[in-house]
Image (tube, rainbow, N blue to C red; front, side, top):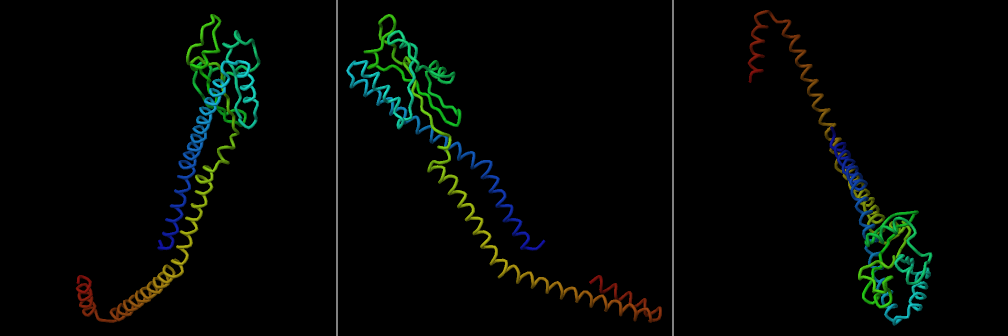
Length: 255
């Protein structure tokens, strides 16, 4: 097999292996990284949102009507992208409302008291239980007129983002688009390096090898013709001379 053929096979194999590694390992890893990054950002934003609610409740100074109006305004603000749900524990205190948990996913978050993520209807959703803090006990009481227990979920904060956030984020650009550009540049550089090597090194060497093969072939053909001529001359010799000739040829072959 020619050297040039081996080099092309090696380059093709390297690029193929790299492409398979990208598809089956790197791309899934990048998707997981993007997802974890977005989820971590949503968690930080929700913690900040909870602190904002705490500041509003503290500034209200036990004015529950002011707190309800403020929370309602916050929930309806489109730029915040957070919806508030309340737990039924507040029904006895404020009466029934229509802003309860809306599906099993949200109800499970209230029951377990644990935040959770899910993909639904083209969105990634994050539900965060709003648990009773010390300042909440001054307003929220049970049916027995006792302060609610610390850590008791009083409601949920629900954050929704479109799934396109994973592909439209700057992180996606640097980890996917920019990577593919670099990979294409690497493949171009490898091919650009092989082409001059082929024209200036491999092709002259191939020509030299072809000429060497031609010279060796002509020499072999000449040796064959010499052998034929010797054989014909030997056949014209007497039997005694032919025997001597065979002995001499055998001695040459052994040496």
